[in-house]
Length: 143
Image (tube, rainbow, N blue to C red; front, side, top):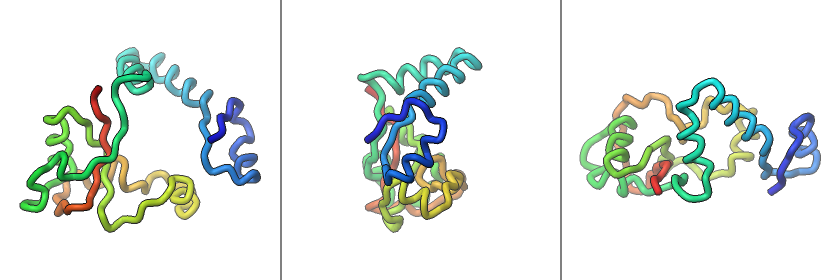
């Protein structure tokens, strides 16, 4: 993994070098500062997400959040509510039928269109779906 400090022309350089994993640290810091300057309430959230101990991002089996997942169809909102009761914030999911792939590979196949990333902030959150063993949820976990 490479750390890129100056983001100007860096994406084309990384593609040329064949680097698939990199961190744009200055952009992350700049974005966080801009959000806090616009809305002071964001400070608590950003502090929690970026501190070395505390909240974390995890992929968990759907049955960890919804024990009776196969009995009745539920919307994403219903599953997210179940997660909140367990102290976890559900931000996405991956169906057992969707293949796992690296984000860089996914972005390449989809011409960098981040609007169609189905596993984070999915569309049609209010539409019931049948959750199955093998589906996973993307959650922000509490400390």
